[in-house]
Image (cartoon, rainbow over all chains, first blue to last red; front, side, top):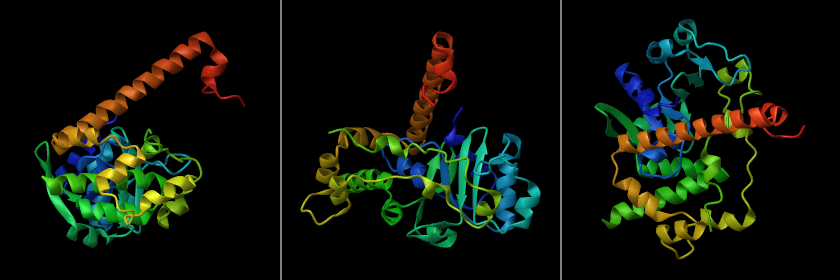
Length: 160
Length: 115
């Protein structure tokens, strides 16, 4: 069962440094597009990856891009050196990204983020402008629909 | 005109090709998806077409009323709505496959795809 809300809350509960981006960010800003995973810009230092591990260790986290679905272990988190982390968990996929195209690394994402409340948890979300910039930088066909929705939402909000 | 690409935002897990090495080196699995934008839609990337953003989205086929509905929800409600729709779609898909399995065992096991 997909539970993207709980994945995001879990990250916050375990004090992971992250900024919501990608399809979930698009959705949180009001897009009607569905998304199946949680994409976050993440500080990829070992201490933060250990927090990611602690947050999801009970939810059978595996590297979903590996053919054998290898488990994500504490040793890997402590060792660091990961640029991105593509996990599958019992609650759904989680992508921890070291960099967001068009924006930069975690620090740059943090500087272009805003705080929102999700069922009692405070999480950081890329601003609408930053998300549009990121989606335009990605430039894939599927990003176009998201860009058009986000720009329409921005216009709506400004017109209020 | 319906939104031609809405289905593609549902992440398709490429799954099989990436190896451990690629994860460590910062490989982005999404880039393996082959996607081609029809030439007639390329113009929608531009913002110098004299249209407002809302007009451009509507011309592309986006239903603005859905966005307006979503803006009335809290962020948490938007995620819950997404999760509910995904889980219902998964349940429907499983029910469909189970039904095919009962009626046509061969089609169900191949996902209905001829090999």
